[in-house]
Image (tube, rainbow, N blue to C red; front, top):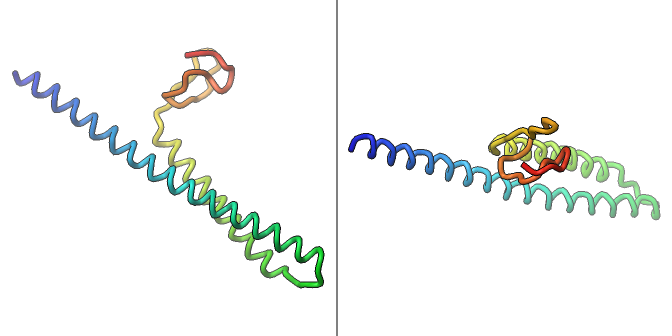
Length: 115
């Protein structure tokens, strides 16, 4: 009876850990999506500023520099978010070519062979 209860407890602990990982991964994906949207906004702003500077006599170099700095910061943030999301994914390696893949991959992104 004790081994049955231990098995149930172990299964519950595993389920709780997996749920926690999924929640954390979802939070990171949402934050990453928000960062991508903000990044798109800054790219559009940079394009507008560049156009205005090229077509007009306006001196917009300070505004352009601010947009560039914001874009660089957002790209760094996005890279960290993607790295964190990757770190939460279980990895497996292709037996054919050795490329690292996520555990839910059906095909290798390196060689294309099925797992």
